[in-house]
Image 1 (cartoon, rainbow, N blue to C red):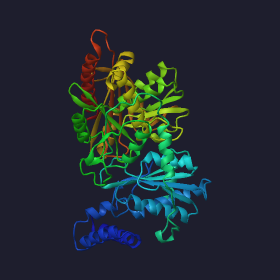
Image 2: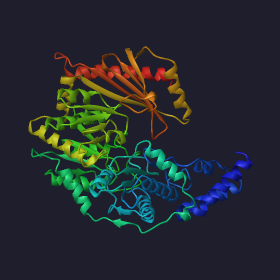
Image 3: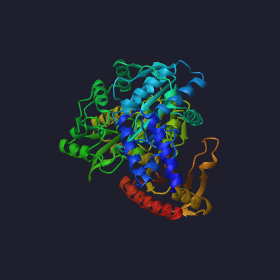
Image 4: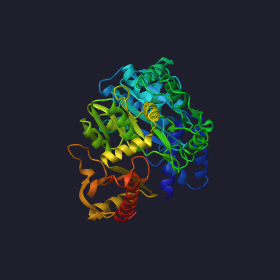
Length: 550
């Protein structure tokens, strides 16, 4: 950096410091300023002020700390003020906004700041009574008739992160153009001292929690309840809620992983608090092995996702998100639940075949529940990243609590018949073909590498991937009558196989979603189909890596 650049950076940092109400981030920034003023390396300070943390369809998410490119009270106050201005401009002045928060560092502080800004702008602000699951916030928006909702959470991000998720009055996450319109109003917020602040809203009592629990428990139908369960909330906020729902539905109390039972924003037992990550479920599966359990179930830290593991001939294994999606869809189709069954374009195509066989409508959406929750006539939606919506009438978002309950109910019914979830997955493979999915994620240090890979794929067409002919390529950036434009490519291959390549929306990664479909021959069985599918997936992985140059 030139001396002029450093001087400009120091001016920006000092201006920020003059507005920051948080003693911790003020102290942090003062130390960085002193270091740079004394001739130290300015890179860390520059990174903290490298633009503004971007507000998009996921709201805000980033590392905690001082600076415009971090999550902190200044950024949150500006976000709340911009959201309030948007709500006023779209006809919701003096409406109600409900605010929830998880157990991450500063979540309660950011929730309080948001409530004070909302009341200062003339809104009624309701605050959930304690750290609670994200789906409970989505439920409360519709239950209380609010104009919007805010959930302070970074879901399954690392412990140093936090985030700010915005919902509108229909209980769904924001989509374009609302995100850009809110972002424009955030950018227009003037000095923080000019943002009016009122009281910290009304803290709701436990009645709203009870109403959510009753609504979830009512999803269960009469049936067997003999099931030995192991559960982990992964140091998150799902524990108490899940235990109460299972009890209300008639299940025995599960064995809970003691080391992960209580909310802990540092997530001390896992490298990454996401049940999809290697090692995250090890303690739960070890406890299940010790107890001779039938099923392991888990939530991510804000309990909007549900994961499961089952015993097999080679020990316990995690079910893939697509497998859980198929099982939940089967449970609802068996109940003759009528309406649209939907999933994201990177999820398995099996759901479409199951819906068609039952005579029910099917829809594909872009990735994210902000799109799935808006499907007309939705009765079930899922995405492969462990997100499931089984009761869109009440929660138009992924809900790891209700999904967990329905999966346990299905497992108990199968156990009563001497069968397992794995047996049911085998049945679905025999009926519809084995749909095997996998994912390749390439993390980069320079985002230009992702753009370069996408450019190579667009300018150098491939005739085959992994030995399967490419029958059609959809450039998702062009959009279609069914899908809004988004950056990505979808390859339709022979034999029903598919590859979708897209940049991650939240991390510096290029993601490739793979699927192959292998018929199950009566003489060979499902195991032979699995072996064949594994080989095809390996070949697809190598093929797309070579084509993208990654």
